View 1 (tube, one colour):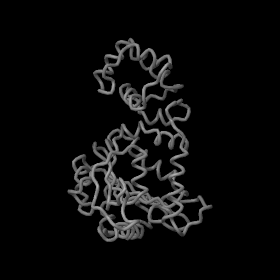
View 2 (view 1 turned 30 degrees about the horizontal axis):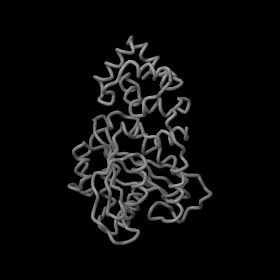
View 3 (view 1 turned 180 degrees about the vertical axis):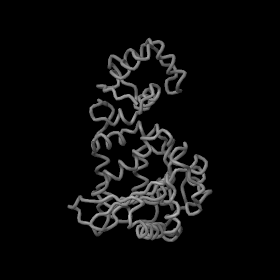
Length: 316
């Protein structure tokens, strides 16, 4: 990976094109052949990009950087790299504050003082891990109102696989958040998101190694307060963004906060679960509550997400 510095996308395109020995016409032709995103691209557009008259949209910027064998997240997430397409984070911060302030089922932890921002992030090798798996199994059973029953043993077996990523967020000795993320094949992800394979039917044999190309599945997650929200989101999203072998992220949102986060990031709805009648049960989608709403988020779509880029750039 090259470590050149660039002012903005105009500077980037000009430098990389010159290094590659391509004319503006040659770059336009190469990009047309590289990705359908550049269909009907012409040398005049390349010229306008390089003169900063206009900027390619973020999806095209990601594809441009991959065309030149760069890692888009390293460039686009750099606060010194000027991006004009980033909106304010005000709407997202307001959403998070609303979710974390009034309903612990949707995210707020009722036992943690709001003015204490200290936390510890433990990994799956921590001595406390077995107890954490018990708590997470209980949390999931309660969240699903008993529709899905997990066990600590089920979680511990999946965590033993080297590619499984686990983070426990501790505040004052309390579990204030967690992430359990699996590396699986695209086919297995499709089965999980469509409901033809239940989460509790996943076996260690279904998981891929870190070196294999596949998808990430967010098996379980909980965000318990502002204390951990920035680190939590960065940990979650950078895992997908940093490794090109991770093609997409899948999630079954069983509460409103997971659903809203995926909507803000541009996730694609794959399936909705059974309709529910209880007011705070499940996730609210299109005016009705469902046992789950499953999403997939392509890696390229994440890298081009203004919310993702803003969150990472503002926390560096």
